[in-house]
Image (cartoon, rainbow, N blue to C red; front, top):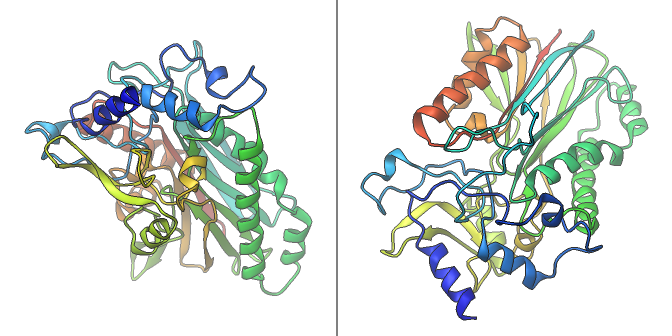
Length: 403
């Protein structure tokens, strides 16, 4: 108990000048972190012990940390998805370049996807915890499935990779194909398909003994572009977390952004209400002087855990006990001639770039999705290097519509 309390006090006393945390406890291999070799996941007590003895996450929040705890802290803001106190990120395996690419084009869309691993304070490339889905023809040429997943926690890269791999298997392609035969897409039905898939993958992950998702999880923003007629297609987007999707459309000779998702932060009134009603707390981490460090987070009622900086996610078993849920919010959008492109990205992009800035960058690439992704990732990288000692994983997926 004394050790637990001491470690809790140490967590509370974190200053904004603390170096970036590690995603694995010292001496624990990725296999052990996932629970491999034991045949089962660690007990709840073991999970708490591992966390209090080491770092919880390698990811950032979408808001800078408060400067009150340190005069120079404005130059060293920390953006963590889960509160923790270790020094380093998980380092990428030898030979891993840390970049994933994909591209494609058909009669309806032209897309490119790029995901780059971030860097530790000393410039060493870390394991990329982001993943993406880019299925241009999902069971039918008139159905596309795109999504981005931003992992966090010691096993975050395993969780996001698991969702990327398993989520498409839980979706009935034939049912979606039937929707393309109709004059208008049943948006409620498609939204229900996505909601059930998100909930199923979350339950499946929780029961999977090869990945410890107790204090690890992933954001998930993804959905379908459906319809055979290029001039009357429908987007149905599901979102859990703080990755984001937007549309770039032209009106009055100018380009504007239309939201396809809304970030789910713990202090958003409706999200906060649910978490509190489930027995959780929503408040920022505090230093020894009572100053807030960073954004509002989700906590257990009587413990400084898990400190999650989002109100919805896939995984995060402990946080789910106090109202954090995988159930996504669904948004629909009818495509018209004015709609030019869609951007889905992790918070490695949205941390420093606004919706409007992203729209202007992609607009300037004149229909070239590869150039658009490269520009978004490069611009984001420059922002991270200018503002932080670390660089988050950066993932951008750009889809141009062919009308």
